[in-house]
Figure (tube, rainbow, N blue to C red):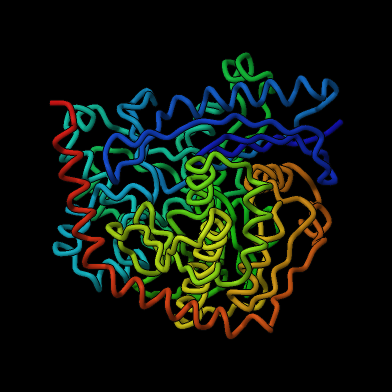
Length: 500
C-alpha cells in the first residue's frame, strides 16, 4: 500500500501519521515530552530528543501497517528554533525555542540600534522581537562562548530531521524568513552582509521550499527507522505553516487558527505586508507571503488551571459552559509567559480581574477560554489594520476537538470558522507535502481533507464581547507597569537561585 509518513515535533509532544494515497490516516502515534525552563524567559530543548522520537514514531507507525510502502517522508516542527551544531551535525547546546523564549532582549535592542529599524524592516519584513532567530544566535555568541567556538551549522526541528535522515544541510524559505534579520524576504535569500556580521562562522544552509525534496533516506537512517533506503524526504517547515497546509488554509485571503499549547495565526496573501505588531514571513509555497501572529499561551493556562484545581477537562468544560458569556464578571489577560503579538511584550504577565468569593473554578476556566479568544480578536484586528484581506477562517489543532472553545472564539471575534475532517495538524500537512513531492499528479488537499463543520458566531453575544474586549485592552494598559516590575523581580529571584 503506497503511503507517506509525516512527523511533527511540537512544544509538548511529537506526533506522526501514516497516510495512504487518498489522504486516509492508516496509523497515528505520539510521544509526550517536556521543554526545559531553566530560568524565567528561557525555553530550551535537547535536539537529540527530536531524532530519538522520530525514530520511535516511524517504527511504531510502520509496525502498525506491515504492508505499507513508504513513498515519501514529511517533516515539520515548532519554530523558529535555533539549534546550533558542529561540523559533523552534532548539537553544541540545547535548542533555543521560538518566541516563548525571551532571553535575547539585550541583543534585540543592540541589533536594532546597530542596523536601524527601517533597514531591518525593509530587509527582513519585521521588527526584531522574541520570535526572531538572529538575536538568539547573537545571544549564544555572547553568552555561551564554548558552544559558539564549535558552532558551524544552523538547524530547526524539521531541517534537523531532514539532515539526520538524508545528510542534507538545508532550510526552507519560510523558516529562514524567521531568522530575522539575516534573510532578505523580497530577494528570497540570505542577507550575506548581516550573516557575516552576526552568524559567521556558521555555514548558510541551502534554501528550499517546504515541499521540495531535500534528499533520500541513507542506509544508516533506514536501519534505525525502518524507512527504506532511498525514500525521498522533503525539506519541511515550521509546524504552524504545515498545519495551514493540512487544512488548505494557505491561499490568498485565508487565515489559519492553530489551537494548541500556544495559539498561532497565519494570514496569507501575495503582497509583503509590514507592521511592527506582527511577523512578516515568506510562505510555505513560492509566491506567497504571510502576516503571522502568535499567543504565547492558549491551551497552557487551561492546563495550568486543570492542574491547580486537580480537575478533569470534561468537568471544567461543563462548568465553564454553565458560567456563561463573560464568566460572571471576570476578565483574564492570558500573558502567563509574556506575550508575542500584537503587544510584543515579553514582560507582560497574567492577570485575573473581577474575582470575588462567589466565583468558582468553572468561571476561571471560562475566563481562560475567553482570554484566548480576546487575544485572537486583538490579532485579527491588527492584521486587518495592516491591510490583510481575511476572507476565510480555518481552525486546526488539538483544541478543535472541544466545541466550547471554538464557539467562544467565534462569538468573541464574530468570525465564522471552518473545521476540516482531519485536525491532527502539522504531521498530516507534512505527509501531504511529501505526497505532493512524489506523486504525479499531486493530490489536492480539498480531496484529502474536506470541511465538515462550520462554527457560526452568536450575534446576540456581540454586545457582551464588545464590552469585554474593551475591558481586556484597558486592563493591560492599566496593569502593564506593575506587571513589568513583577517580571523584573522574577528575573532577579531566578538569578539568586541559579547555580553558580
